[in-house]
Structure formats: C-alpha cells, structure tokens
Amino acid sequence: MTESDTDGALRDRVEAWLTREMPIIQMHGGTSAVREADPETGEVIIELGGGCKGCSVSDITTSNIEAELLTWPEIEDITVRVPDARESLGGPDQAESIMGIDRTEGGRGDWGSSNPGKDHL
Image (cartoon, rainbow, N blue to C red; front, side, top):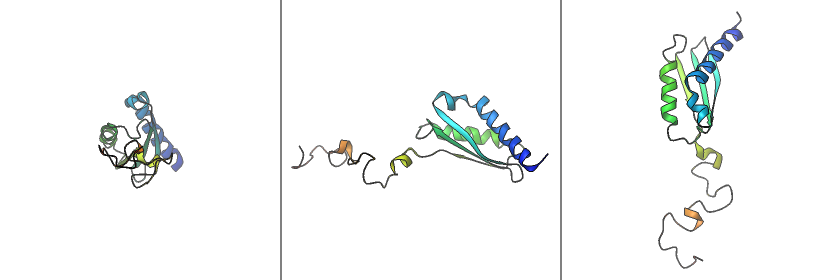
C-alpha cells in the first residue's frame, strides 16, 4: 500500500464516519470536508461550512467530532474549522456592509439610539 493509499484510506474512513454519525450537519444545511488526514502524523483537519457557518451550536458539533475522532488510535490531533459568518461580510472591522449601507442599526445612526439627531429624515 502506498502512502497516498494510506492517506486516502484514513480520509475515506473519516468522511464515512462524518456522513454516518453526524447527519445533523447535512440536515441543517451544513457541509463537511476532510481537508487533511495524515496517518504518519495522526493529524486530521476537517472544515465545516454551509449552514454551519455562524450556527450557534457549531461549537458543540465541533466538540463532538473532536471527542470521537481522538479515540481512534491512528489520530493524534484533530482540528475542526468553522468559518465565522462575519468573514463573508469582511469581518467586524469592515466599515460598511456589502451593500454600502452603514452597519449600525438599520443604517440610521448609532446602535439603538432613540434620538437619531437633527439629520434624521
């Protein structure tokens, strides 16, 4: 068996496990992909996307995946990445939304202001 066969075998087993044991990912519109599965180092990297991005329970899903896969004898280190929902909008430091509208509440001034000021329409 070649090294790439071994890599592929571990990758395939992890992907099959994700599909079989974590159907909640797909049920909630999420995706999962094994980005790396190195049997030499025991490192596995999984990336969640789709509905997992910004999901309030993605940290629980991530913990469950990590806890199970760390029980596998050939896996030493597991990383599960979940993109932050803000990444697609340029992150928290972005001054404007993707539509060019002020990011403050409804584009009407500062957050939650009950007195929008004299320039308010």
